[in-house]
Amino acid sequence: MRKKTAYLVGIKGVAMTALAVYLKEKGFSVTGSDVPEEFVTDEILKKNKIPVKKGFFPENIDLKYDLVAVTGAHGGMTNPEAVKAKEIGLPVYMHGEILGRLMEEQEGISVAGCHGKTTTSAMVASILVHAGLDPSYAVGTARINDLGNAGHFGHGKFFVAEADEYLTCPATCRTPRFLWQKPKILLVTNIDYDHPDAFKDIEDVQQAFCKLAENTTDDGTIIACIDNENIVKILPDIGKPVVTYGFSPQAQYRIIKAYFGEGISFMRVIHQGMDLGEFMVKLSGRHNLLNSLGAAIAANLAGVGWTEIKEHLKKFSGTKRRLEKVGETRKILFYDDYAHHPNEIVATLDGVKNWFPQRHLVVIFQPHTYSRTKSLFIEFTKAFKAADTVIITDIYPSAREKFDPLINSKMLVKEINKHENKAVYLPDIEKTIAFLEKNVREGSLILTMGAGDVYLWQKDLMKRLIKHAK
Image (cartoon, rainbow, N blue to C red):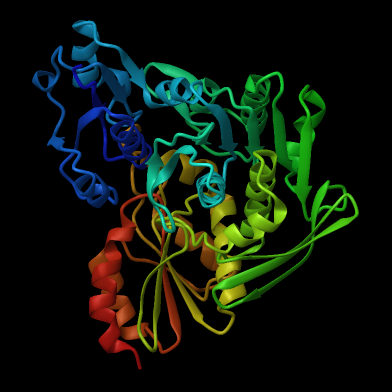
């Protein structure tokens, strides 16, 4: 029998790389294409022997492919390779659609939320793997630290998927990507206003999440964090069973105590008056305790006992680019994080201060997209209160939007400094290093932050700054 073949357009995106690994493990011969620039997923694709063509050319596509999947970046369905595939009659799917179709082959566990869905879905997958359930999973990160690849074809009955609210294809299909999923268990971490190019207001975002809730199977369950007021507002509109969690006294699963040490966090949980005991996780911040509890409830609904869950949670140590420790010297710590929304920034920085209250926290923030920076401008200017020094780089533009002359990083710096004079505009890595060479101090923690390519700066930062620590 001929081996099935799959071609992934934009294969270096984290979600696409997870899909590529999943398909290869399922028995497909997988290849794809992307831009030549370095990506965080390059190592994973190489390790899994998945070849990547440089650039997008119609001649890369021919009738030998059984499946073509396309990312929303690089033109989506208007990409020349996608256009060619459709012209010659190949089955062509956007990433969101094919992920939903694959989930239908197993019982779906979808993790949605404007923040925290990557960490939380990875945690659900981790618990189920360590419990011996061998789930399939597809998570939007380059690596799950304790599992390795962020995509896996498992032989168990569950499929764990990150459920992204963004558009299926910015150019041709405005359906939120997660609406292709029809899970048995739906976990919603929070609802917030993001993606101003996709949603006109918070009510528009809430409506999309309501539709996702309707997608759950007839015997399905929704797990919802009721510390988030935007979730609370839509609960009366959800006609499916809902299990709630949070710090809130109204939560069915409630965190009644939280405390933190360096590199470790603890929570005590009660369930409708019954003490479930203490949980330990290797993640920072109250937000990640909430994520951990949500993941634990999902695993419990999937059949894992609470004693097992406590043990398996200890094995999870995060994912690539989520408060990832990049390096350390005796004097300086280097971390990187994907946070690109004001609420994510606040939560991450508060988590860093929980773990390292005495460290001088230097944040190098690269704003991501003109539209987000403009729409959430005021929120961004108030998001860095926990930082001691804030470096704002030039805005990292998305391939899906045009330059906007009405917004820039200098404007952010000016407004931040109206509240507290600790921000500086440094457009690129060379100016940033020059500044830090003069200002870095013993005990500093240097955190790169953003959804663009700022994580690539870490290697040079470590190399050139270590010798300047005093």
